[in-house]
Length: 288
Image 1 (cartoon, rainbow, N blue to C red):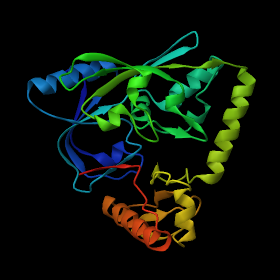
Image 2: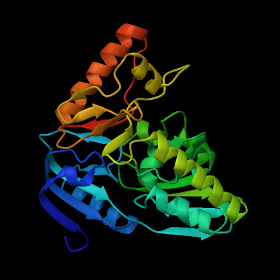
Image 3: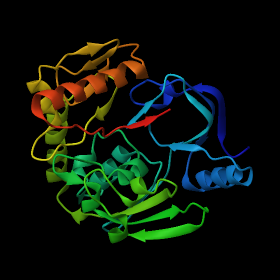
Image 4: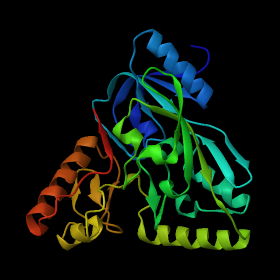
């Protein structure tokens, strides 16, 4: 396959922000949407159904790894035209945000520092500090389950909290998305970004591998507050720990296994349900 990088028996710990995950039989790395399309068609012709990932920022991959083929969507272009910015799905969300700031466009300040890809952000309607992808997205181009090219306008995305048409129908693969932003003063945008980054660094354990917030926000409250109230801040199983900086994060303190993380998640859910009556729902995806 001359158009993509192919890795065999590849540790998935190299491809997740948690730095956790056993080997995949094969990992094919595509660098843009055209290459991703060619790879998917190549595999479909051979009746191979791959697991598709982006930057691996919202995944817990089993210690036993993944049998078969993983396609890593690992790059893409970002283009600006007036107030519109179009990004291929493999482009980093931080790259998208930085390019918007450099063009004095406002609306993606919340995205600076989120480690996922554009496709992953659209897939789960990523957000932080009051901002969400749904607030700025205009349309997406995607491949349906038969690898036919289609366009989805904003309303078709069916956005809600950490949910979209694509999370409900993962057989559809995002190739690119277009966002409309607002013109602003570059100095004011940069000041807002610096403030959010300072806030993020002060409250989140960025110095450790993690998958970001582990749990969705429960109705009427915050997962981190409930976890802390239950005395679980700092609780450790193996190399996995409830962050002492932010109880909504589970961190890899060094050598954590997926099993460590999953057992810690289960313990948190049981304790919070028992002590508060709230059932915490995972935000991260489990694979394998």
